[in-house]
Length: 367
Image (cartoon, rainbow, N blue to C red; front, side, top):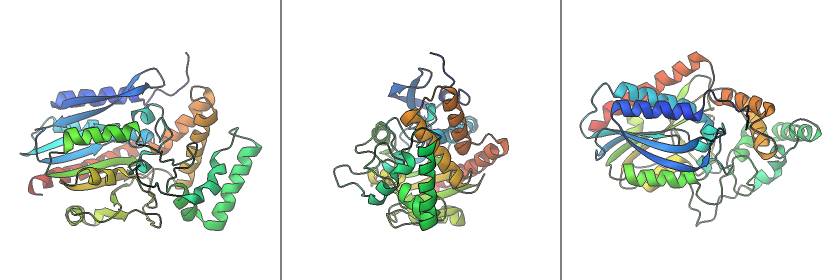
């Protein structure tokens, strides 16, 4: 079948580059196959590379692709650092664990969400307990349920969004929308009603590769929020955790501390009103580990612009065809929002990410 789906950059090339860098560095590789295929029929998987002693008690963990289309930045950074680390020795009792593209379907299909329209950072919840009840989202759902892409219904949806912004303001509306919801599977920032494949796979990886550690510094890699070309270092959890003072001492004023909840707000641009974050899942799964969960969030374009492209991509997967010319335009526009083609942006986020990781690696032996 002929397709106009973009192939550069693409999931297959990112994975091949990562596997080559890990192999050259002497890392141990484990593959976690995904049940679905990519847009070109390619096999999908999450790959884990462990550099150093797999029994080491001190770990630096880098996780890419939680939000699939954001995974290109994360994958690039992982591959580049593996290339650098392969030329030197790690400190004693320290290992580096690279979790490559935990949402491989989202990366391959250039979506922020997974194959079930689930935002993974709203999916790490206890599904045996009552789910967060974001009742206010229902009144906004029509903003994201229009069809066709252009026309009277889209105009009404745009007018509804404009009216809500005029009445409540951007931060208040986005606190509702981005806070996550579990009532509308065809809505934006859907958190799901059960653990997703990526959620379950991450817990397999935690059990296999992280559970024996005594100390771990984990970095979840993202793009989209914040000032263009500025990588923010955050720690995002529901409450203070035991190793938080050490994390704050290690990075000082570089570190933004965000505590999430329905009434929470953050000036960083991330959704502090959301629950179900990967960082909290790591803490919950590893209570015996002195864990510092970090997020590196690389700013791209203004939130209003990113939001409009997310709406277009949401329409595409509800009603359109990702393989036709219109789908190609939407995909390339969305990719630009989360992985700018500007080489200066790409260089800046890599330089700062490497600095953050090098600082962590230097500190690990004494933590």
